Each structure stands twice: as C-alpha cells, then as structure tokens.
Length: 230
Image (cartoon, rainbow, N blue to C red; front, top):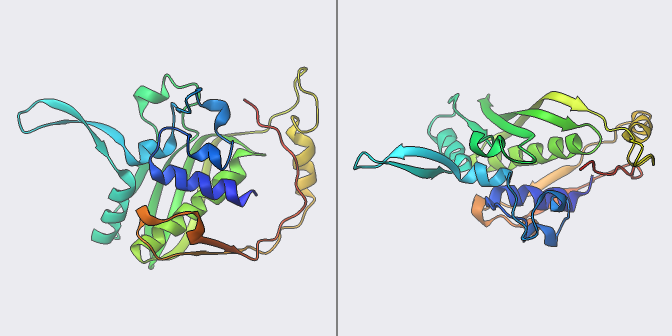
C-alpha cells in the first residue's frame, strides 16, 4: 500500500475540493478522470463537504444551499452518540447520472457502540486488485480521524461491495499487469503481516496536515504491479 498517496487522497477528500490541482502534486491516482484544468466531475470530498440541498429561504423561495456532511456527523455524535443519522453520501443524482465515473464507494454510516466508533461503507462497484485495498485503508483511516475528533475509541470497519470484480487482459493489453488474475493469485499465497499503528496529532479537523499522521511498524510484502483500467 502506497501510504503517501493514500493519506494525501484522504486529506483531499476532507478538504472538499472538486479539483485535483493540489492533489496531483503528491499523487497521480485521479489524473485519468480529471479534465485538463484538473476539475473532477465526481469529487467525493466535494459532496461530503458541499452536498447541494434545495431549501426555502425566509421569503419562501427555493434556493440551493450546501450541507457539510462531515461536520454534521461530528456535531451529531457530540449531541447524541446514539444517533442513527450518522450518514455521509457522495451520491448526488444530478451529478451521478451524467458523470463518466460516478461514485463507487458512495455512502458510509457511522455507529457508536460501547464508546467505540464503527463505520460501514457501501460500495456499488469495486476493483478487487487496486480499488478495494485503497478503500479499506482509506475509510479505516477516516474512521480513526473522526473517532479522535469526537473523543471515541476506534471500533470496527465493515464493507459491503455490490459488484466486486477482477480485470483481466483484453486483446489490446495482454501483459500480466493489466491481467489482474496473475497478481491476485500471487497475493493469495502470502501470509498476512502484523498490522501497523497509526498516530494522529490532536488537532481540529480543518488543521490536520500530512505531517500530523505517523504510521509505525508498517510491514509489507514485495510490490505486485497492477495497471489501472480506465
């Protein structure tokens, strides 16, 4: 797992940006789906922090306002840890029905039990070799970030994938890196290694930066190369 790319991606989500002009300085993982100016139709974090909502103003007129779902979840946990409304969604139908890459990991729900924060991610589509490992690590990291913000212990992470798939070689790309079966078979032979420890600086969410995260005792096997299917 490329820790630097993963952490920069999660911080990018939390920034609420709908472009990758800052993100691409650190990782290229979203370059293939952005336009030449770096704008991204489906930027997960943008909808986390700026979800559009039609509401009536004091004059009874409809207007579009933005909802910061991440801040709502933090505030709601602090108000009522037993809340069943701790939901964040990146699926905005007006965008998702026209985007060339609508959100794959589109919604997640937090739950507090016995002083611990749990998270359940639902994903409509998942690339087993490349996407899913990043998603598992990213949302586990996000859960620890939110748990620290609300003063809870870290609980469990659950993941539902509706369509989990493996990319295999086409006539245009028959190399092993494009045919993910080769690498996945190798991965299945390997024994899991001890989990690392993650320390996060105690800061308000909006002040967290890359250097506030410390990954300790991360062990890994040799790299398996997988090409992204675009």
